[in-house]
Image 1 (spheres, rainbow, N blue to C red):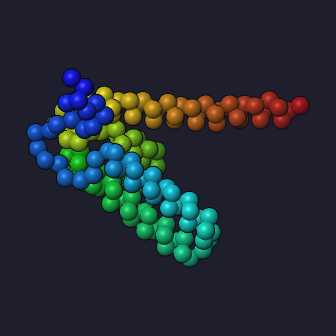
Image 2: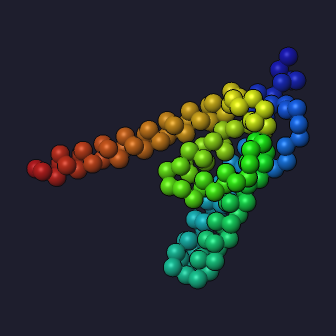
Image 3: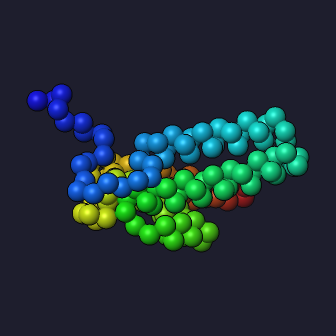
Length: 143
């Protein structure tokens, strides 16, 4: 019963969608973050080597987005949304949440809904912490 069904994998689609699935997309972005942190610590954020690495990391991230858009079945031109502030956050959540072949059903699967809910909860937590931090500074700073 349980052996034949993979609950966290992408669902079966009618067509073949090239590109990168959501797990590999997530792992690739973790690798990009790790390389960014290590290079900033090792070379320093103002060094020319770090500036070149930052450019290469930006290009790699853009290529990953294009590959992910191909995998979910939408136009690769949506990768330009990465350049618009605040919209890029929603774009990133959508890329991480959508399953392979999302264009066929235009609905998230169970794992996609969980991923999107975790993102929304984390964003709400960050907004709450920022708001609470400003309130506590204003309250305690007036004493």
